[in-house]
Length: 123
Picture 1 (cartoon, rainbow, N blue to C red):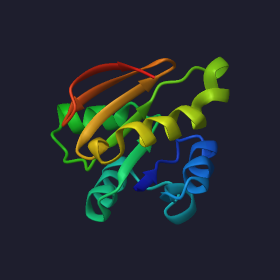
Picture 2: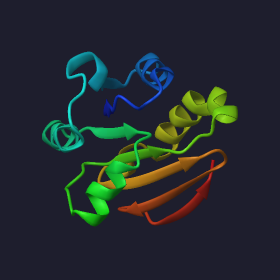
Picture 3: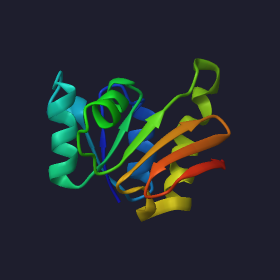
């Protein structure tokens, strides 16, 4: 699968997804300090699922109606960061292509979906 990791995304997630054969572009590697509208437009243009820890993307998608080709919004507190990369890899393995055109909020132990998949699930 193809992903775009926002600068706020823990780089351990980028490394873990790449190690599992996924195509991941990191904003910090290709367009540092790009504004959020540019980031989400790039993700849509390239048909990549956006990985972010930045709440502003929820505002862009839900309040401002920006199109998104999929967003994984990461909400892990510091104490749970050690599981983050593993949980993202598990999420992608379990839901795969269903994550496209969906807004998924992942927290330790569960995921909330809006869009193509609706509801909550345990991780």
